[in-house]
Length: 247
Length: 100
Image (cartoon, rainbow over all chains, first blue to last red; front, side, top):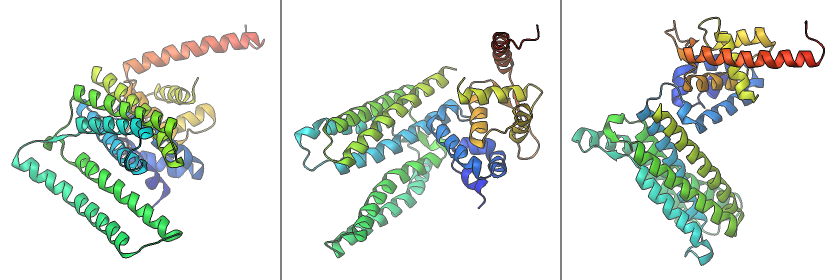
């Protein structure tokens, strides 16, 4: 694959639909000097979905909701992963942030239309992600059961595969729903999206601040910084969404 | 002026002559400034300008997507260029390089 097509693939789908061939040709003609600028441009556009071309209000809301859902769900899993079990008093605030994040997730989750055609279509869309996630989870348990006392590279590989499984299990159903015909889902309206995004941002903020204050491991501190960045991005997306819905 | 706004002004100026597609816009910018915008800067500027209603797509031939200025885009460009002209005039006068 040529660099132009590969780098153009990093852009959000509506941008690719509008500019894809032009963008790929421009990247190819700019040579390696333009690759960094291309990636930075893609990142900037992913962070501002309200600027994506030809997005109607509902398309835009759906894109923002799915992005927020995926990032919040992955973060929730990561936060639970780094929290000690049982949760100690010092990490109580982090746990509160996690609960708020989950409330935001529930608020944002698109609901299925209760018709047999929609339910069949949703089941069909979710079948592959669920099978893949189940197979990966099975492999994790099998690995854990078959071998013990791993150190070095095998241990790192095991941990990496464990986290990859969690990320796939959380994100692939959301991505599958995003690709589904919007007619099969009730995507949150303006009000529910605004409340959900504000709740998710609050969860990220509380978790991030608590993590910074009480982090006992470098993983918790890193996650806290990521959560604060996600809080800012979620609020930015909420502001963009409201601005677009008013125009 | 921030780099992003700089790119947007260049794109608006390139489109003042009429509808162009992305590659042609960058060629026009190269003729004006001596260098092309990076792909991310160019298409980021196009995307932001369209989101703000300053440019809009026109029916194109083939796979390329020409864009043109909207009325709001024309007004914004005129205002920005008048401001730049005042700044340029003042700067040249201060440097003793003004023609009159």
